[in-house]
Length: 260
Image (cartoon, rainbow, N blue to C red; front, side):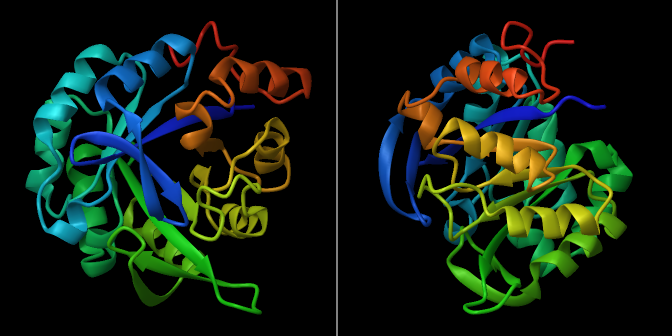
């Protein structure tokens, strides 16, 4: 059985890590380079770095910040935000990232996923899906531009489509759960996990140790992502991993982190 992964997420705006609730009311959480390095040392399996305002502001990801972060991080490192072309992917990878994450650009032009996979390999292409539940229904719609624009895309069907296009992984964020600390949306997670054969990263709602266990057992996720919980020291990566090991979840001890 493949080990489950714990992934801190660095949402960056104007050069600082920020975190809010339901994608709004952002507050400062620190310097992205130093936070990424700290998570590397603390045993995180990967780090995700998202320039959350890039698509809305129509600019490219801050490559210099990517380079500086990559210099200090020795675990797999994913970068997203404002990536809209194969040239953008190449620049991010050249700057030091192991993977790139696309959301808005993939919805606008799905061929970007297949072009990226063909050029750099599926393992390099993560499709981020920001999903909000349709009120009163057991289905979710995809949102773009940092969660600010609704689409008519069904999240489960879109996940299946991007797998067919060559995506190697899905970063699945529940917009309803984002920053609430009420737990992951495991109905959403399991619906997507059962529909695809590529890894699913659960995101949005982590608030206590049990939520991570539930994401793996009930949500069938391959990895669990959290932000404010780690940024504001409410839990550490080691605490989460020690708990999961005690619960019988296959995961690398914090002392090993993502180093293989």
